[in-house]
Length: 218
Image (cartoon, rainbow, N blue to C red; front, side, top):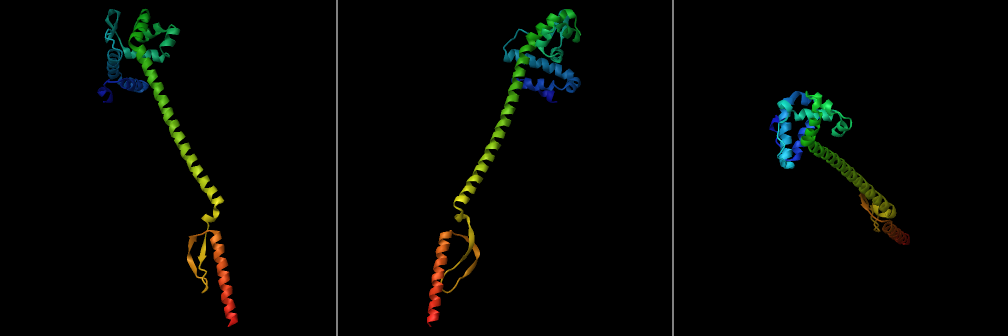
């Protein structure tokens, strides 16, 4: 259903179909439908993307023998691509694999160049771009995680340093009143600094001593 509903409005649509061709089992199962869609894709690419209207589809060899573009694409891909087939003089093998004659080798090379070469080039470029974008996204995500970890570590380090430098501000202890009537203990904790505590203790001692002297005098 996805294959039958597929249309070509941008090259990303072409890439989606060509991605499907990486699955040999899928191609074997739906080859009849893929052949037509593959020709539709080539037709759109030539006429819309490249603005070339002089290359008719379907394409034919001598004696009115139809050349299946899908078979041509898959045969060249299977042998390692256009350059490898050309360098190793394998176009005759490609022609024979497609049910044609060895003498059709040059025709197969020309048809691939006319209908498929630029299309495959665009496809490879898109694949490389997609891989690079995925890698960049992964690197950005990793960098963001590292940045957050460093910020968290820096914040913890600063807090620890502050505690070490001004540790008196972070200490808690039981606070007691220092009036002369006696020490009134509270069951709560409150923050205080040591200098204030020392002054409070000194005041308490003076108050206790003064009160003790009055009692002895009486």
